[in-house]
Amino acid sequence: MSTENPDWEARIAAAWATIDDYEGESAAGEFRALIDSLAAELPADSPVAPFERACAFDSTGHSDRAVPLYQEALRLGLSGYRARRTRIQLASSLRNIGRPEEGVALLEPELTAPGDELDDAVRACLALCLSSLGRDREGLSLVLGALAPHLPRYQRSMANYAKALMG
Image 1 (cartoon, rainbow, N blue to C red):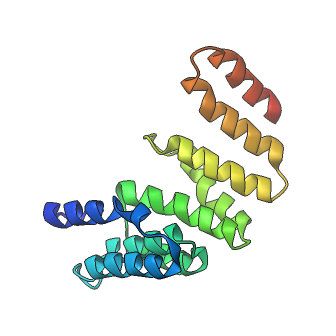
Image 2: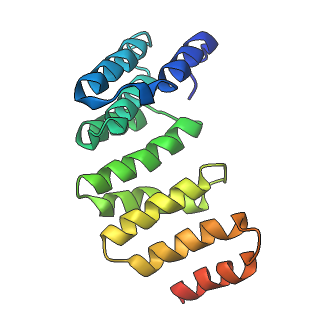
Image 3: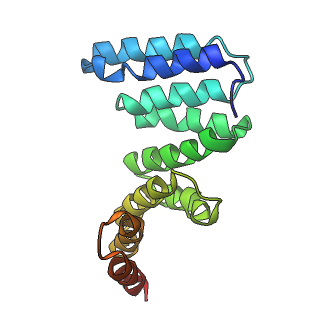
């Protein structure tokens, strides 16, 4: 779901472009306040607002605070590209707080969703969740399968190795 406000989208993108300028917990709090002020401009029922707030908490090391905000964004009807990002980031945050099985459940359906540039991120995050559950072979298979198309050579071999790990 887009905010359908190109000016706001440009300002949120500009804010995110500065995240590396905020080092340390005090500066991270300033960054979260910046994102929060932009999110506060959106309507109260906007699913984009909790998504952006979740991203700010997540990106500053607070997965535990991000999880309920990601869940709220989805509950409010976040859709499209941001919804897919939310599922990836929520799964990662769930893994970080010791709930990788929920991350697996969130991401497995994404393997058969219409593809986009986030496909490899889905597989990478799912692989980490699987590894946290002791399912390393499945995770390695996903990572090799995602990597294979990007290799200058050995694409076919790596794709076959990925399949063999699951067989």
